[in-house]
Image (cartoon, rainbow, N blue to C red; front, side, top):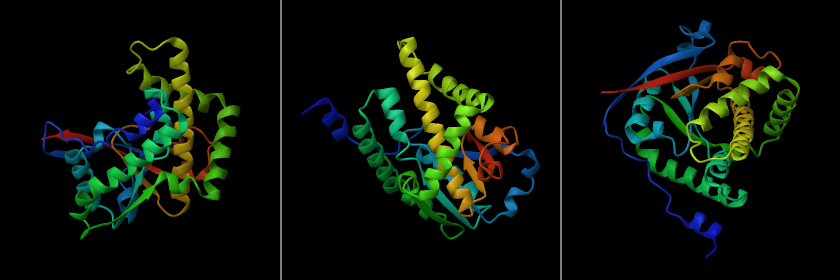
Length: 248
C-alpha cells in the first residue's frame, strides 16, 4: 500500500473526550460591537465547525448547542470538510486528492458522532447540517471567492490581516519546520481563509445573519467592524459572535 493510500485508509477519529465533562459557553466578543445587544433578536444563525479542533469535543460542543438553543429558532451547522483539506496538506504534507478524501471522511464522521448532541436540543431549535463541500459547488461561491482573491491581491491591509492570522496559527506549530515550509503553510492558510470567507458570504446571502464560533476570527471580525470596506457586502453585514468555553 502506498503512503497516500495509507493516509486515506487511516482510521477516522471519533469526537474526542475532554478532561472536564461540563462546559459553559459565554460570549467573548461580538462584531460589530453595535450588535452586542441586538443579535439575539434574529431567529437564525450558523455554527462554524472546524474539524479536528479541540473546541469541538463532545462536552464543549454540547455547551455551544445549549447556548444556541436558548437564543435561536433555527441553526445551520456548517461543517468545514472540504476546506480542512488545506490544513491536512499544510500540517501533514498530504497530497491534495488524499487530503480532500480524508477531510470529507472526517466531516461525515463528525455528523455521525455529533448527531445525538444536536438531537437533545431539537425541541428548542431546528438544527440542520451543511457541508462546505456542498456550498463550494454553488455558482455564487465561485463569485464570492473570485472577489476575495482579487481583494487579497489588491489590498495590502486586507492581505496583511489574513496572513497575520495564518502566521499566528502556524507559529505555534512550527517546531522543526524550515522557513520556506513555514511560508508555504502561511500561504495555504490564506487560501483556507479566503475559501472559508466565501462560504460564509454564501450563508449570509441565503439568510443566515449571525455566525457563532468558539474562538476568534480576527480578519472576519475586522470586516464586520467596517475595517475592510472593499470586502463583499455579505461579510460586512455579518454579525460574528465569538464564544468562550469555560470548564465547570
